[in-house]
Image 1 (spheres, helix red, strand yellow):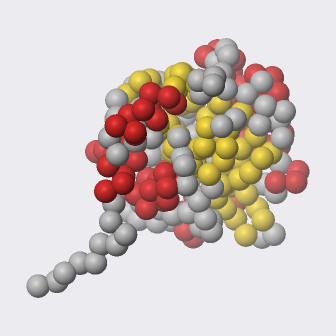
Image 2 (image 1 turned 180 degrees about the vertical axis):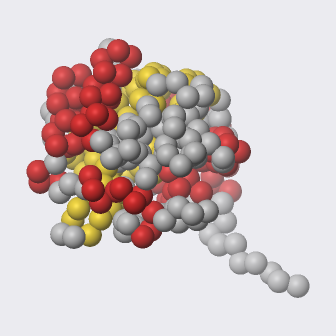
Length: 271
């Protein structure tokens, strides 16, 4: 049997608030500069409009006539790869969602995932401008089952364990993570990989947002043991690339069968 190997490229960038056209141009330039041959290109959360919830609806699009989807289709066809399109703001019959589109090598939209958990704390009001998605989405990318999450979803290990139980080989978290929260970003992205013995692409935006707020940058691709195998440090823009080999991961899972030790329930005894 042919060994299951997949090449991943993930683009870290600083988006211009509310300017989809400028952000499309930047993605095109960064991909052209830093990506040659790959199987999957991953983009960060709301790269289309930047992390500014009050501006979300200004750039919202319907799937049926989306210039963002058309652009991602162009990228998929041009580079003969799958695209995990970060996220854009989707207008679905007057309801708005923070939505990640997934396109195959032919440029066809295969599925979408809408962010399940909305960050509405410390003055951020994402939940006032978009609605939460209904369920996780596991997409089969040429035999590599990939669990999709967006930013704040990383704080909920339940979604990742559900993916792992459904056969996930790879987790992707597309984010626009704030600079003021470095410890949660570093710890939780690594933890989700380690506790589920699964590859993780932890991709966030970089650079200045607005109102003296910055994205953290420092995107990483992490293996099933928690080792960083590719990264973009600090605020740099560009693509990180990694080759993910599934057989060593399956072998490790077979030798370290800790997920089999999970109990059916954990009823707490209060004393």
